[in-house]
Image (cartoon, rainbow, N blue to C red):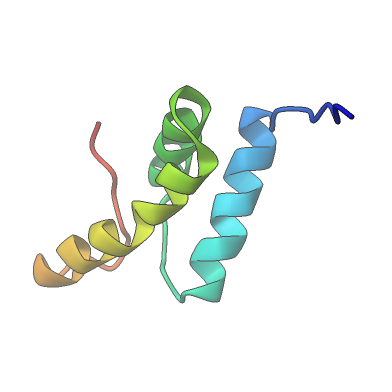
Length: 71
């Protein structure tokens, strides 16, 4: 049996990433959210979500209040 699944749209990916960031108490700028959505579209949603933790750690080290992803 083959079960077809639909890919997430970029907007859906952004929403999922936003919810995950809120769950982990990570503050994301709108720009960072857009970049992570693009990364998720080009790679996988799992990879984009896994980038939240290292990006948050770097933001804390650099005394940033919002996590910013530079691509």
